Amino acid sequence: MDIESYGGDPRIVATRAEIERIQAGLASVGNLLGGEVELTDFLTSPLKRIGLAMELPGMHERIRYLLQALDAASNEYFDGEALVAKELTDIGLISAPMIAAGLIGLANEAGMFREHAVKATKVERSWRTAPIGLEGLGRRLSELGGSSQILIERYGNRFIAYLPGTQTWNPVGLSNPIDFTSNLQAMKGAGLAASERGVQLALAEAIKSAGVGASASILLVGHSQGGLIAANVAQTDKRVKGLVTFGAPISQLSDKIKVPTVAIQHKNDIVPKLGLNANPLAKNLVTVERVMPISSPIAMILEAHEITNYTKTAELADKSDEFGLKRVRELVLDRFFPPSTIGVETGEATLYKLERVD
Image (tube, rainbow, N blue to C red; front, side):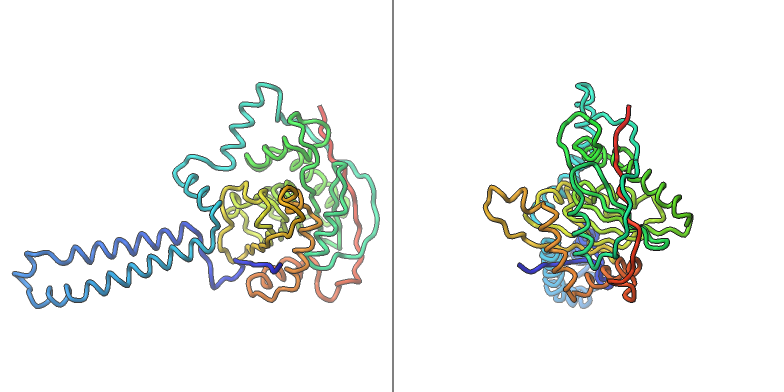
């Protein structure tokens, strides 16, 4: 099935709030025009007021048409689930960080979702050829197992960190920090999840070992929780110059992410919707969507979220010539993998094991 994409085109930038602002402005214009025709005015300036009164129906019709067109455009950009969540968040009823904070607060009394200190330990080092395209990034992610490991590759002063999705679902934070506790802590806010702090420790060690200091630039690549962690880190670490996420709930952070970002999401994957919003139309954020073919309705939750299936969608995204997608894809990939080095550049690949400690 073909992909769809939106965003990444600086000529077309909008958010739901911006569309609503324009709608409110048009409605105000309509009200002001209506207020210009009062019965008493016909006594003082009858010819001018009659002329205005004759023009008003047509003006009101054009304003009504524009309001309807804006509403239709808004519904095109934001799907049904996101619209419902958007309206709830607009009136202050729910937000993803608020829900996460509430759950953590309630569960802490029972000893659940509590965070601890964390460490990052080098496990293995090897040499690898640089990945090719978004598909190559997805394949590297899919190679990471469930053993609380992340991968950091270095090509000169360029670092690519691969962050996997949730590996354990125990509500009590155990040794593996890539777990449900980190899910909630990361949704609550940046810098709270043990897995996020472990990623920061691993990056610090990798950059220090390379001796490149302030010249380091980082590309963060994450699936599910890994994408959320990557988005959190991208908010605060100025060395981060690009972000690629697969099936990650990052919409609640989209206004805080300033680096070029490719967000790949399956429409039938519930996880990206946990941000309770839709990604905006922004010049440096492109959202790639696809309905992932599944074997059965029962298998939808798992299959639509699997990184191996997201890698197939990434392959389609690599081939797309859609302007916004191509532009942001190149902003991300060409910086870290210059065309002249594709398939030939070799870099240092280091596995780091993340562990909670008492």
